[in-house]
Length: 203
Image (cartoon, rainbow, N blue to C red; front, side, top):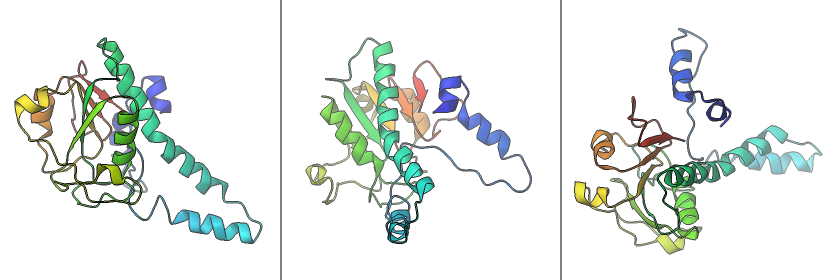
């Protein structure tokens, strides 16, 4: 978020840093955390530490930032639509990638659900596409999406959306085709390298 405010491409920074031959582990930004481990397990330690009068401020701060990422992504999407003189309310939005990470069918704690909820609350029409999750399973936190099915992957269908939001990048998704067919893409995973920046916004 800081690099974005400075007009610096964080993905270029990471690629440059990765050229160091030792002592560097790349970590990548995204639309929020998912899964059953990182969003939850560190807070067991936070809870236990309180019993002993200790604060785990870094864990709590990281949790706050990760939880706020969907809001940042929706703000980037809203700004991109506004630049095309379109409101979010009433726009058709396609979320690509509902699983919480690449190349798995696990959507537990996925930020994709949060993004879809926020979009729907803002008045957008929301659909999704994820080859690993053809039908949304019942979840405790987001039961209202249960039974939703993926859209068909064809040019006419994808062109009908005002914007595409890439929340998870799967290897078996044709992102080049997606870039060709879409009117506007919000790419949170650097799924489309060397993009046409007139219609692709990194978030």
